[in-house]
Image 1: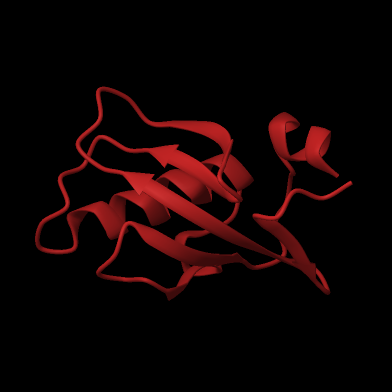
Image 2: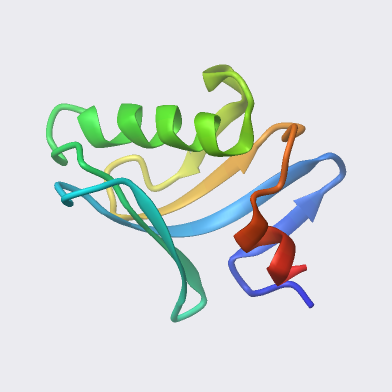
Amino acid sequence: MNPGFLRRDNADLVLSLTIQAKSSKDEVLGDHDGRCRVRITAPPTDGKANLHLIKYLARVFRVSKSHVVIEKGKSSKYKQVRIINPAVLPKFFNDCE
């Protein structure tokens, strides 16, 4: 069963996220009110949080940074992110399917 924040679009994944910037560590916390809550260490200024989020998700899903696209919410803590053809589905997301 897919949670509300995770949707497949052919080979891609589309995630609805709530981002908590300027956290003590990078981590995926899981489902929070229908969105996946993600903490990142970067501050939410000058696009630093978005760049860090892209880098972090690329590492988590083992894709290049160009395969992580913020589709909606570039200036918001609520984001829709597309992972293009992820190489792996991390254990947490496997458990959600």
